[in-house]
Length: 267
Image (cartoon, rainbow, N blue to C red; front, side):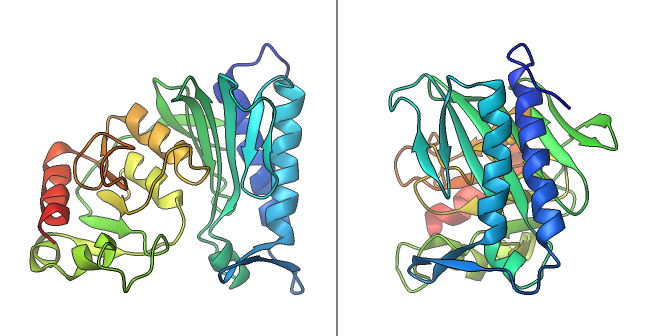
């Protein structure tokens, strides 16, 4: 599909994420996938770099004047640009390198500090979760379906990758250990922000993470999707997003959100 300057931002985000996902899918069977050390035990693979090139190719063809922040290539364009694309070409690199298919490709457009279009692509299911800032949908096989959050599963993804688990400030581990959490919810650790999109889709009751997430290439797409789907989205202690202690609680409904925030405040 050819994207022009006249194409809607959401369609561009969707197409860019799908392009990255196609690369991730094709390179999955490469048994000698090259790794590039990023320090601190983190690394990128050749698939991360190739997927980012594919995403950026779509974005630069469609919006050549926009700024871009890519996880692997860094910042390009004007530092104070009103329009900035945030790109995570392979969220779940550790999963992918271990031949685990739980990964996603995230593309989000931030305009004046707000996410106005976003997409998260699942390379292996063929689904692309996307939003134009008002609607939240999933496209599969060329067909769009509206996303419908639900807390019925009671499954809550807890991100364990954001801090030292030994730190007293690491609430994720303490939330899982809290008796009131076990009484009501069941923890999952998917290790990719594809799970944030799953909250919007009704496949998870909630997602919880520590950390400072403003303009995050990992989380911006999922936050945009969940807001458009009608989820409750705040910082980990219930404060407005990107304030106070930071972090994220995104929940399918207000009751689930209140329960998780209450646990986070108590631990």
